[in-house]
Length: 175
Ligand code: FEO
Image (tube, rainbow, N blue to C red; front, side, top):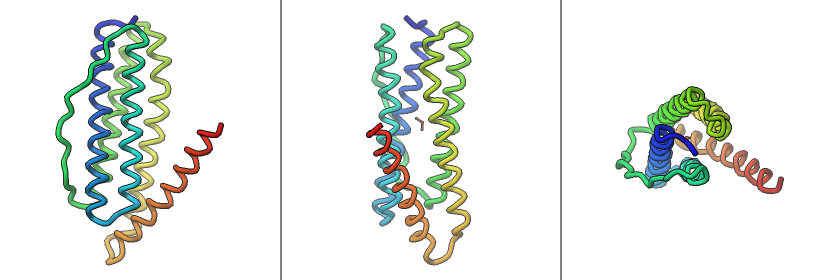
């Protein structure tokens, strides 16, 4: 059983992960409307991953005999100034999620809640990977610059990342 405070904190994290899923879905739709198919595919996958992050917490709360609550999700933005601005917003949101996970770790430590501490380890690793991936993408976007073919090259770069991620997911599924 987790404390009431931990339950409320984890329920807030459900909302944050749910918002990430909707934000990335809105980004996927905008990328599609701009003809950026590689970026759209990438954001659809990120959106699905965030739903999984949300559900993992949902199931965890139920497992420890708490009450997981379905949150109201704020309306995410529907349009973005540029693909660079879009990925900057993804990176900023991931940093916010990381900070929030670290706060939950602090609370679990204060409460000697070893079960939740153990549960959170997966999120710590996931956030490290996601932040690193978004920094890599932003670095590549900056390297490509703003030439006439830049959007085409950025989309090609994201397609390469899609191929790597899909291969890794297939290997994980086989393991
Ligand atoms: Fe689940 Fe990317 O934060």
